[in-house]
Image 1 (spheres, rainbow, N blue to C red):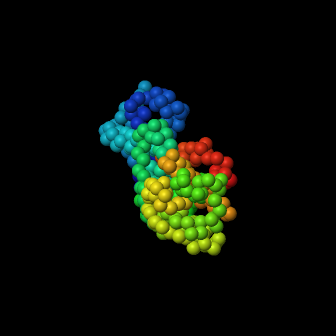
Image 2 (cartoon, rainbow, N blue to C red):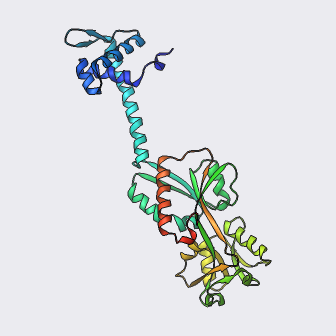
Image 3 (cartoon, helix red, strand yellow):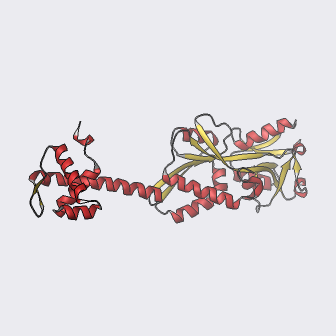
Length: 310
C-alpha cells in the first residue's frame, strides 16, 4: 500500500507535536491525549516510513535527520488542511463566497430588493451575481450551471429541475385612474372582451396565463400593444393606451404612477413563483444563506392569500 494511503492526519499531528516539544508528555498535553497514545502514533509513522524519526533518551526524544526533513512536509500538509477547513468554515458562515442566481428583470425587481439589501449588509464579503435574463434564458442558465439557482415561474420545468414554490400571486387588472375599470371593486375576465390590452410578448409567464385564461372564458384578446418590460406596460396603461394584466406584487410597484389596480375574478388566477434548481446539484453555503433570508422576507411581507402553501 502507498505511504499516502497509510499516513493519517492524527499521526502527522502527533509527529509534529513531538518534534516541536521534544517530549511525549508535552506533546500529549498539546494534543489532549495520553502519552501512550502519542507513543503508538509515532511508532506507526516510523513503521509506515520505514525510518527512525526520534532517538530515545531517558529525558527526551531527539529528532533524527529524517525527522528534520519530514517535519517541514508534515507542517505544510497540516497547514493546507487547516486552510481548507478555514475556507469552508468561512463559506458556511457567510464570511466569503458568491451567490449566482437568475431571474427575469420584473421578478427580480419585485422580490429581491429587500433581501439583496439585507444580505449585503449582513454578509458584506459575499458577492451577489444576478443574471437578469429573458424568460427563454431562465431554465437554460440553470441547466448549464451558469447560475446555481433561479427565482421564477416554473411553467415548464422538466425532470432536470427541482422547483420549490415560495409564493402564490393573483393576477390584477392595471389601468389609468380615469378608465371605467378603475371605478369597479373587481373586474371579471369576461369584461375584457373588446378591451385594448397591453400584453407581454409570447414566452413570458404572464402572457401564457393571460392567453390560456381568456381562451377558457371564450374571449379573443384585443391586443393593442406588445411589450417586453414592466415599466413599458405601466406607462402605456397610465397613458390610457390600454389596460395591462400583472401579478399583484408587480402591480403594486407601479400603484403610485397614475394607475388603478383591481383584482381579476371569475376565475381568480394565480401564478406560482418558485426557487428553481438543477436536479441532483447541491447549493453552496452562501446560496443557502441567501435563500433562507429570502424565504424569511417573503413570509414576513406576504398577506395570507399568497403565502406559499395558502
